[in-house]
Length: 198
Image (cartoon, rainbow, N blue to C red; front, side, top):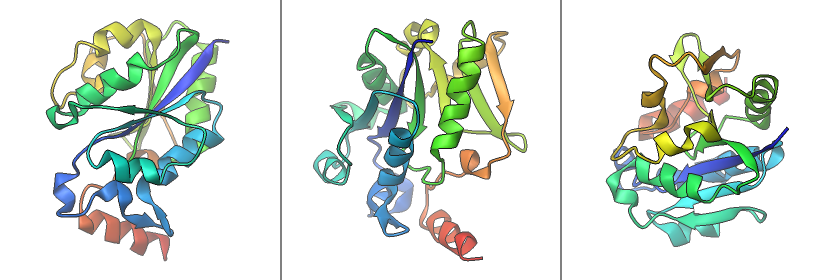
């Protein structure tokens, strides 16, 4: 099978978190973004590409070795620009990319590898998208055949908008709530800690 890259989106301004950059907020003693990157590095995906933007120096300072860093100078325009930056850095030999969000610290390598394995079994699909109890989830695997369409997205549009009505998108129900837990607010961060303590 062809290689599958990982793209960790870590460029956002995290405006709903208040003054703090959520990606640098500690989760289990490590910056939130470090968990997403560690999961990608522990998976079968290679290379691992991290797209930075807002407070790029600070975010890059906490990244582990072994990643390719791409800075998005246009990060304030929304998530689409970070997707474009990440996809542009995917090497030609990769047939797909798994897109992770830097604010989903509970997603593990197993979820990433599940998407890669499903794609290996069905290489004609354009995307593999997880869900948990009916909620759309992340990360999402994008096959190279979808890259050109994703590169046309603008603003705060993610790739999921392209999935509607397509017969070549594989939707996968996962028994893993982590794929539906992103941390956008101080309350969500506090709730994550509270839930983990139960």
